[in-house]
Image (tube, rainbow, N blue to C red):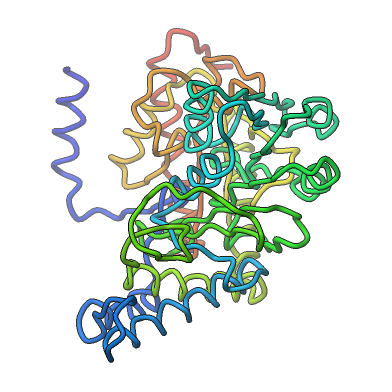
Length: 400
C-alpha cells in the first residue's frame, strides 16, 4: 500500500510530462487519415447498409469499398471478407464455426487466449484438442504437427505472429500440411497485418483473422477471411448480414476506418514505413543489451515481425518496471494487454522454457507508425536507470 501511495503521489506531479508510447501490440493510435475517412459516417452518411433508400445505398457502397480494401491487404476476393468486431470474435468464429463435438483440433501452446479459451470450451463440448509445444525460440515443429494429425482432425489453428514475442510461425508449411491432410487451417494474423505481407493463397489457409486497432484503425472492428466454399456456423443469429455469416447491422464508421487503415498498411509495406520501424526496434534492442547486464531478447534468433521486441531483465519484476517507466512517461507492457494483472507468468514465455522468474522479468516493446527516433532515444534515457533502481531493491541481485 505504501508503494502504491508513493507511486500515486509521484504521478500527480507528472501531468504535462512527455509521454512515449511503445505498446502498439496492445493497441495503436488511430491515424488522422483514418479518422477523416470515418467522420462522415457519424454525421452526414449515417445510413444503414441494409436499407434500400439513398442513405442506405451510400452506406452499402462504403462497406463494399472497405471490403475491397481489406481484400487487397489479404490477397483475397472481396466476397471472402467477413467484417467482425475484432480479433477475438474472428478467432471464435473460425474455431466454433468449424469444430464440433467429436472433432479433433490442433493448436499451439502460445496462441492468444481468444483461441486457447475457445479451444478449452470446445473440449467441454466434447471435442479433442492437441496443444503443440514450441522450442526455445517460440516456434512449433511442423513434423510434430504432422504427427498430431488424426482421422477426425477438423481444424488446425496456429497464429501467424505472436502477440508477445513477435515470432512468425511457418504458416506456409502449415498450410501445405493442412491441404495434404484435407484439414481446415485458420491463422490468427492480428499481429501480422500491416507488419509483414499477407497473401492467403501463399499461406494456404481457409480462415484468417485481423483486428483494425492493431494497425492504426479503430477499435471494435476486424475481419475474418473465409475461403470461398468454406461453410461456417455463425456465432450470432439475426438478419442475413455478411452473407449470413455474421448477423447484425454493420459498424459503418468502424468498417470505413478499417478499410482506410488497410490501404495505409498495404502501402506501408513498400514505402519504407516498416523498414523505419524495424531500424528503430533494432536500435532499441542493441543499445539496451550493450548497456544493461543480465538481459537478453526472447526469441531473438527467430523470424519476427519488425516492430516487436521482448526483452528479459533478470532480477526485476516486470509489473513494477511497467509502473516505474509509466511514471517517467514511457508506456510498455509485460505481454498481452488482455492478461494484464494476471498472477501467472506469461504462458508464451514459459512454453518457450523460460523460468517463471525470467518470464516475469520480461518486458514487451512494440512500435508503431507514430513512433520517432526521438521516442527511442527517450526510452533509452530512462530504461537503464529504472532497471538499476529496481535491481537495487531486489534481494537476488548483486552488481558486478
